[in-house]
Image (cartoon, rainbow, N blue to C red; front, side, top):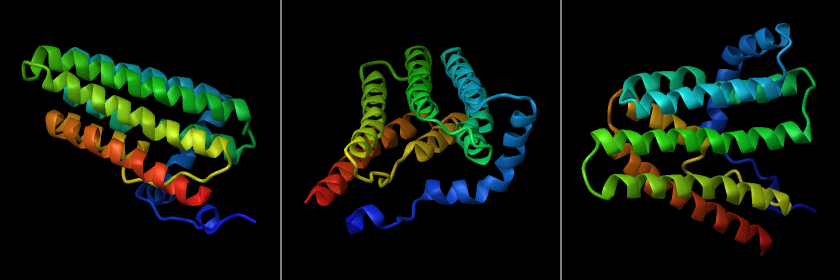
Length: 204
């Protein structure tokens, strides 16, 4: 018998957004299906746009980087929607999607490092915030992957990937980069701790 922690459905902002955005993203998924582009293909296309966003940021164009991230970031949800709606789900596809997500965030954080080197405050604070935020983001993803591999549910947390990318896109567009980095650096680690505690309660 599964524990209450495993069977209980928890509300989250990202889950709510996926629900209301599905009617908007479904036509895009249908277009990719008509073009005979697989979910894995959509995943790789999305990675290209994340790379473009990171490049624009490194070139000192945060607003355009944020716009690209805001417009093409939803492709991250389209690949899964395409797989579910057209019966293309596979274990490799899920593995590839999770792996590519980490590369996508890596491109963004590298872009942030280059941008702060040229346009940010001098000193170690900027790079330290980027490193802390990137480490926290990876830990949020790792805790979920490791927990689910062991049979636990682990989707809780205040700052899932969706929230991180949304906050970053807004911060880039309106040039609130340092405040956003502080938020990411702090709350990604809070989220990782939330997930550790959530798995601990299930394990006990």
